[in-house]
Length: 358
Ligand SMILES: Cc1ncc(COP(=O)(O)O)c(C=O)c1O
Image (cartoon, rainbow, N blue to C red; front, top):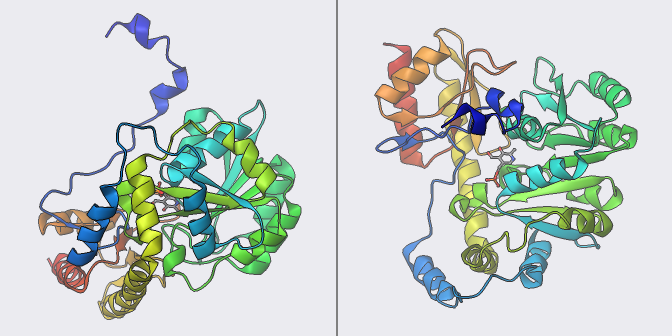
């Protein structure tokens, strides 16, 4: 490739790295917060039957109202508002940042949190300001309010529960942030199915708030589907920069099927919550590690007696893949594990014990 051609690209690309996904072939995969359960056999054949209606020679429904109605019925909001559908919630985060990307505009988020908010801002060329969480991974409200006053962000991203710390924020703090912000507050409830609370009721009363959700953590990571809920006028503006047909037909049909059979997914989420409780109990009994309580389908664990990087490598040698987050600001010596099936969680705990005692 000649330098001439490369010199035509935006220079910022030089600093960026492509999103890296490790190869998990042959490993117990507990790194990406996927649901460990797939569709039961009888459900799978019903799903395939439903999929056989796909008209693959046609473009998909451009704005699938039926699907949107089913989503609203299941998750709200029930009193007005509209939805914008995305090819995963990542696409919607990108679309939001694209929509505000005018000179001088910036976004605000917290750290540690979901890295894509910052990565997407960087790739689009929008400034991203970051307010560190306090020592117990709670919002530093005074610092948040000060940053809002100083930078006037067009978008504030808050994951609820937060990834990778697993906790919820105080609702009171969210209200104060909503009141102070002149821009849009995006509450990302990717892990909502595993949490004891949701901010859907707050959304209805605040037209400067948007709520982001995904099917990925529910057990449908393969289909890439997310949605944004909020004030209809605001959603209509964002809809103008959505690419046509961004939700393919197979995804639309699968999502409709999933919503028609939502009890199965709700039951799986309930099972995962209970498995999370047992995993937390087992981790608490292991000497040399500190698990953090979680409202999501993962647990953040601090290594107290060994180096997190060494423990991670040792787990990998034992064919267990989790996520090494210890290099991220505020997460020194921390690893993050997805709640797996009962068997996977046992393999992980045994391997962790082995790594700590090696
Ligand atoms: C907080 C948060 N939001 C959004 C996403 C992206 O989800 P999707 O698979 O819908 O793009 C993730 C993925 O891990 C996440 O942790």
